[in-house]
Length: 80
Image (cartoon, rainbow, N blue to C red):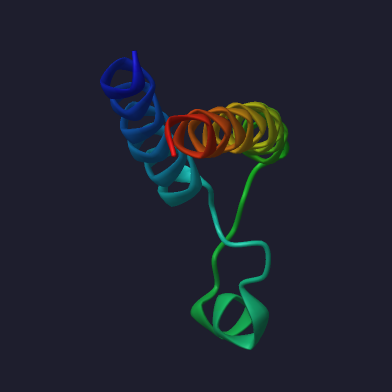
């Protein structure tokens, strides 16, 4: 059972890393203004919705990861 939970935790960690890497940076700073990046209204709305979904997914996957960590800790303590 402990191996199964460990594999689930590993998968949750990989998904968490992937979701965090897919998120866009929150600030482009001065480089975005100098580079002349022009976003249309539609692309801004789309980016915000994707970023919002990724932020929500990050919270859920992180919560699952924490719960799995606590379960593994309890299982390890019980086996001592």
